[in-house]
Amino acid sequence: MYLTRENLSYAKDVMNLHQLHNALIISDPLHMKRAILIAKDNDIKAWSSPTLTTLYKSQYARFSFLVRESIYYSGYLILRLFH
Image 1: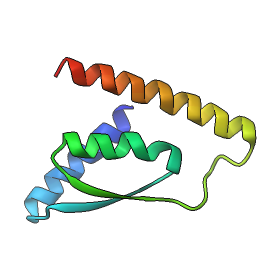
Image 2: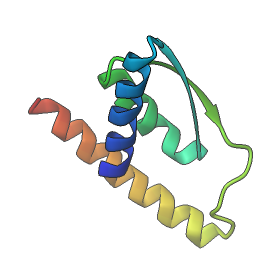
Image 3: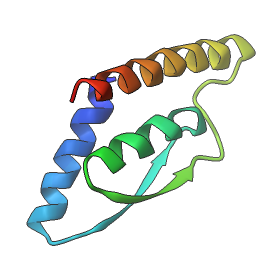
Image 4: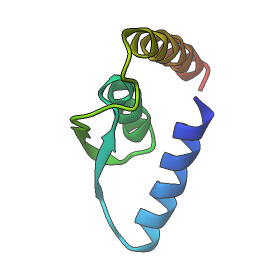
């Protein structure tokens, strides 16, 4: 969860340095919802471009990733309540 938040925070710093206002977020489809929400929370006007392929080939790997993302997304929503 923290890696995505840190990456988008650093991206916002670079965008500010170069006076950029829009971003294209490219990521695994199962990760996209959280990534876009974090971008929004960093005042990044972002569009999503989910990858057509995934590193998670087996059903078990995809399910495990989905569970992990669901937990991270829920955790992020809770974290937002306190900020």
